Length: 269
Image (cartoon, rainbow, N blue to C red; front, side, top):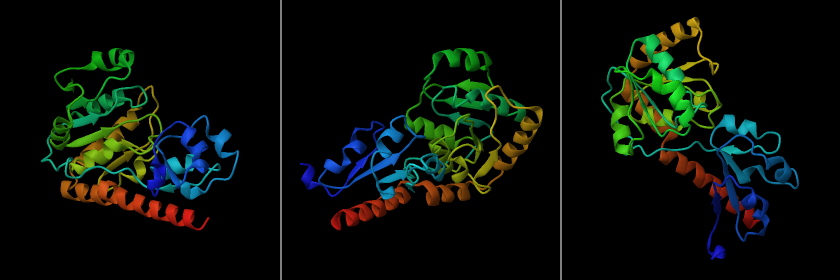
């Protein structure tokens, strides 16, 4: 069966596929979705790998794998047909995994400082964090609506004035920002990891990274201005930038180039 494939695309975090790539009858391309993994130095330092055998989901993630390898970059892509444009609204939305590193408690701080309502959606990954940092702060203006189906989430994001993206770790890519932009919803995000590669002045505003403990008064004042500026952006422009930077079509074009290059290298071995 393996001999019938031109290329194998590996998205696993386990080292086995990379470690045994030279036993395969066709090239293997591995996408790096995370910072450097514990096995990386042991395996990548043991023999020579081509940089072209690896692709990172952002330039920021690619840099984290230096000097072991220098992977190319193909940004993650989203289905622009599924994440359809919405009319906007008056409140903010926060979506994603509810866990400390995603820091939705900081989104609450931002929304309260800006005087706008906030709707939080996503699966609770860390129940202790949710009970301590989120649940006590819920109210008529700060709502948690659970883990929504995709169509429900698209509707929520599309009817929001802005999307708040508040990680306290370096996001390898920042999928929720791309999803919001596809809906035409501007993004206000902490400038961590790959987010500055997605969000620019035409699609939202970037804030300096925040400490897990919270934001200073000056940071909250700056964020309030940023939220107002982002909410005033043209939603059509935001969506067009999403299509250019992080659509599934642009991702597929990137991987097609990577596949062709891998096959060409394999053929001249």
